[in-house]
Length: 233
Ligand code: ADP
Ligand code: NI
Image (cartoon, rainbow, N blue to C red; front, top):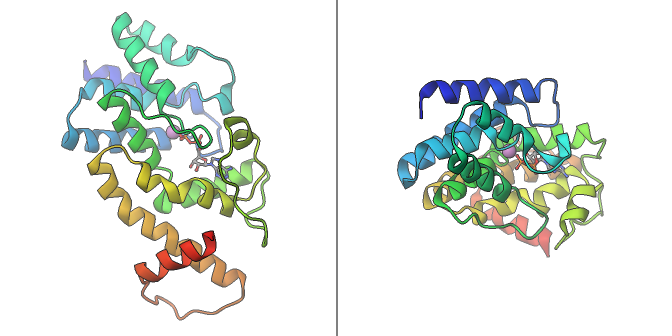
């Protein structure tokens, strides 16, 4: 595939996301594209398919656009005259990668696994924290409500309509993502982001409780993990 196709896919995604403040701006797409390329370089798979699926993975997001059948992705690829096989392969990947409640599907192709890993990678770490609060804010959700526990085993409908707090979103989804990575490359990349996120939550809870910590106190990973599991019980 010609490099120009990816450039045009970038511009197409940019035009689709114009004005979005829910964490689906073009920069999310660009980060997923870049992460997917890095993972693909280690894991193999068809790079063109990975790149196109990454660039188009959210252009038909049901939360933003409604509708079925991936019309935006199809319209772009048909305009590029990419051929039926490519269109169906990429649409197939896009349809498989979203996290749906507790029943996360594993994509059946290596390319799909890579793009799903890249999309999940962008939901954790410092970026993940920022996106979660941006998204929660855009839906009018409280950051945290003491005593309101995270919910387990939500169906897709419950997950989508959840009015839960953003802190609970970390426990319901984001802290689980590192273990859901499909590829070894992504699992390794996810470790540091996971630790950072868990450290952030610990800090947040301490500040919430009015505790003071000395600035820059080193974070003990073991302690964080313990704290996370304590909280979960
Ligand atoms: P994507 O489409 O990129 O796979 P989602 O559409 O599920 O991911 O979510 C987009 C971003 O918004 C992610 O960073 C996700 O963590 C965040 N998000 C989704 N649902 C919630 C929620 N209930 N509270 C806070 N953040 C959320
Ligand atoms: Ni995404």
